[in-house]
Image (cartoon, rainbow, N blue to C red; front, side):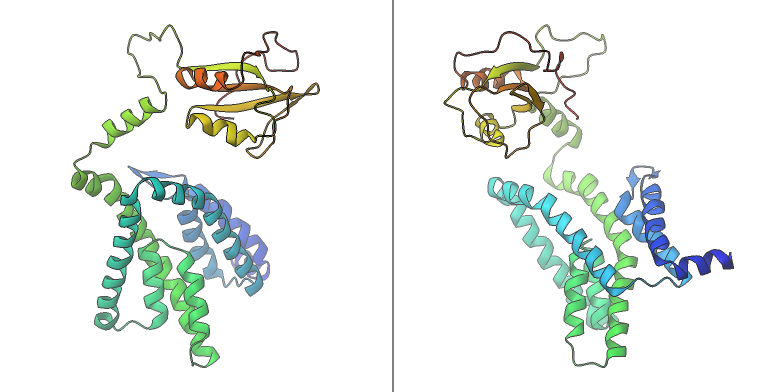
Length: 306
């Protein structure tokens, strides 16, 4: 055991990737209706492995944290602004959460006599908002304190965050799955079923029967001059949540398109989507249809999950 601890302390890169591997394995374990997930599992694994005296270089820590924040904003940003623009109640709920957390923190700080580091970590963990750690650490570094006191306060941020993150995560799960549906008088199972049908899903039938006309269909279409120069995402947005272009045949080569790829006249595209949306989508390409299947194109519609 002593040899293993010395190995981890002397080789922090091993501890780093070990925490990632163990954390994702722990996060995949389901405890009844709860599942910690990779982020929370990695946090717990890092707390345990860190007891071996492992210390990462500050540059590695800062770069890793910056990458985490970038990935979080990159994946969640577009959906956030799109949803807020369509549903104002989501933006209002965000403001309510901010004011409630700040109010609770304003009560807890004098009542429990928390130092600035612990208070910031409490806010970050309670809101499960990791970005607060970086902001609070920078703010503490600019306080008029000696370097040792600054280091202690920054360590308190991480400690308080680690302790409260798990409780904050469980609270959010309980609120969204139990309390919020009760407040909104909404049945989650029925809401999920309505959304599934809206997106083109089919109801499960105990007798195993299926509709004679499938709801999800595919068409092979030729790009004409009217669609030339448009991007794949622009063409798809013409029928919102309806059709996607899965393959493009161009000069004998089959391509898997990116959203910003530009279509050219003469391209052959494989489109997959709901039957009702496909009618409007195919009409955009005019009367020209590529009726003869090419050997370079897939002989069956591609898996929608790939």
